[in-house]
Length: 152
Image (cartoon, rainbow, N blue to C red):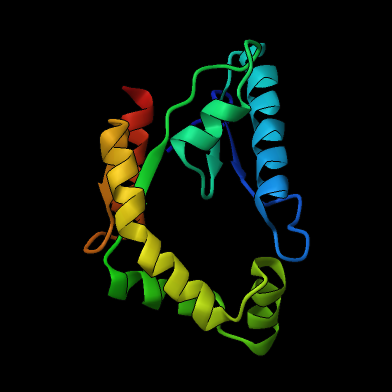
C-alpha cells in the first residue's frame, strides 16, 4: 500500500538486538533510524520504522539534521497482546531468542508489555499521536488505516 519509490519501510530491530537490548542500544538504534530518515529525505522518500518507540525517546535522540517524526501506536487489549506475542514465539528456539534479546523469560516479557500498554496509550494520547485500535481488525485493515495516516 505504500509505494517503495516513496517509502522506505524497515523494522526497528532488523540489525539485531544485543543480549538484553536495553536503553543504550535502543537510543543508538533510534539515532541510526533518524539518520536513515534524513538520508531518505534527500531522495524524496519517507521512512517508516515498524517497532517500539516513544515520543520523548525520539525527541531526545533527534538533532537538527533529522526530519520530522510522526509516531503511530497500534493498540490492542491485554488479551490480544498476550495472544499475539505468544503466537510470535511459537517454538522453543524463538522463545529462547526473545528471552536472549529481552533479558527476561517470555512470560515476563509478555506481562511487561501488557502492564505497560495503558501507560503507552496515555503517552500517545497526551502527545496527540495517532492511535489505531487493532483488536477487531485484520492486518490488512490496520495497514489501510496506517496508509491513510501516512498519506494525509
